[in-house]
Image (spheres, helix red, strand yellow):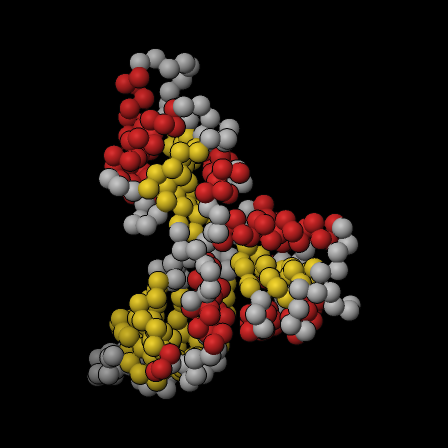
Length: 351
């Protein structure tokens, strides 16, 4: 989440949503009675003599919406907000009219609250969070898989096939492929990203050198210890010891550690772990939760959205940390198998 303005004195914050994790944060920030200011579209009906009563003109307008309802649809990465218009940049838009907006990655907005709580501030500026985004390339001379790792969310962008067969002939024959891969990486790269290149053999060295030339100063790291390429290689890369050492302190590595520890405690009947929403809620109420991990497909289990948000906020308000796990990754699938939510406890609580 890119925060362009944070003014708790006047109870407002302006930011841009970048990822699915930001949507989860936003869902926990927005409450009934808050005001969202953003660009939207609205159908304005004309009332002249020749206009049809069932037709209108859709206009772009900046609206301030007093929130009545908010729902997260994590499966298609959007938040739906319904409310009442209290301000509008277009005079033809009636005040006090009901309206709904959809917020998805790439959306910018300002959130105004009657009071900006310490928890709200923590959600906007989480302590100890790593802001590094990784561009991951798993490549050899036949194919290259490209992905991005932002927070704990992995996205496989594309796979590039070389079309080269058999043993390497002339070195020059691979140059179009190497150049294409470097070009795709340059398109995905954003300032501040860390590019990681891995794969079997030494061919990845040529690709890494080409990427360095394209990025002109971008941070490119070569890693050994990966035998896979393509999309499977991208997913496997983040589990390698060399990447975990490189990304120490990142959310993805911390998430893997937490889930592994939770599974260990469950398998050894350690009482300092709970899973499923009712038990996590009890532990949160007691202030016993040290860290809570929730899968981004948790709503597929039938969990009540408002109750989940309430529990997650309760965890953080009492000093615990909340993490969102990507359900397409191995550790996310493990969380999903335990009802979509699990928590490591500071101390055991009575069942």
